[in-house]
Length: 191
Image (cartoon, rainbow, N blue to C red; front, side):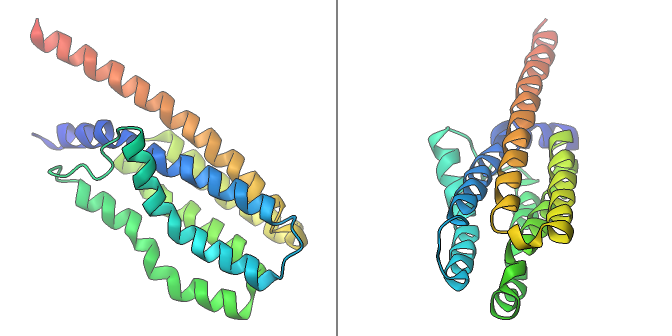
């Protein structure tokens, strides 16, 4: 296969990673709900850290339930996609430091980190949805961080949940168009 075929194979098999956005939307929604409970900020921050660590395994679970080949073994770009997705683990020391020293900044930093993390997927998956997601998440985090920081544990998670949901819808449309395009190409080849 040439590079375009490998990339299309990855996009089709993984459905452009849409399962991760489903899980992310639920994560942020649940974090927003927890922001209304009267719990100590250290406990809430710990739930944030544990929750963000659970997104990847839950994304794989959701992919399996939806019969999406999230790992795409055998595809030459699969390892690259894994590196892009997995590089966030290298930010764990910063997350822990923020938890210890400036816990009120934790949702803000997680938002910026995840927003920036999805941008390379816009190129890998030829996706305008991921461009939207990255820019919208970072802009929303900046607005909340600079103007509504006292409400960062409530306003930001709900806002991000909506952004992730919109991105999921955009990726679902992109996947539908990809499937239609691929079917059209196969028909032309068969003729």
